[in-house]
Length: 318
Image (tube, rainbow, N blue to C red; front, side):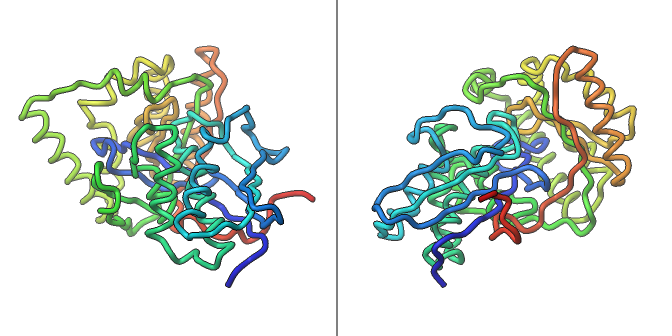
């Protein structure tokens, strides 16, 4: 069924989980994008920030992942419809929580829904990847795919259409902190090694296999330990987040089972045994940032099992 106007919610995501660099991510609650798409008479694609968006920095249309994904979706549908996007973000770009991917997925899905094509998941995925490429420089799926499908998603890094949902049979409680520190993905990638030893590659692969098993079996203690097992990527990127060690230490002392960077940072997430411990861990992470004089956003969250969808109620004021 075609719509004249639709509002969608696209969740943010954690990526590079432990040894899952560029291939494993998970959608989370509370963080993400609301995007409203509505038809307009003139045949053009336009956009604006909602006044209540928590991030509304000046961005050229060509650099806006929502705009690029929406344009790609229109082209893939062969549509010349005029569409206006209204974007409300719950977090800033460059946080490490897949903000650009949430925008891309939300916009692609919203345009598809206007045309009654919200079930065309493969087309939405490709349009969203086009948008994500705008900021990351590559069609990485470790944030796009969790935002699209919900839950844990494992994908082949260079072929994101090869993807598998990894279901966890128990609730997963998390705490997330976003320090007010700028970490450029490009800069973070420049720190990565061009070559690793065969022994390191074998160990990394075995750890990823164990992590997938921990998720599927609901072994939260093992999952917590494994998110801290990355020996190739995270140690190099940690230097970009000044309070990194303090946050990890404070979270562990408050009951976290494991703590790691999300994406290239600056966000860190913690695996927690209970909802109440997630609240305690978030508070400890916040205090650790304050000790370094760094502002932050910290809160308890959980896995979003659904992914992008039409919002139950519009958050936009008229």
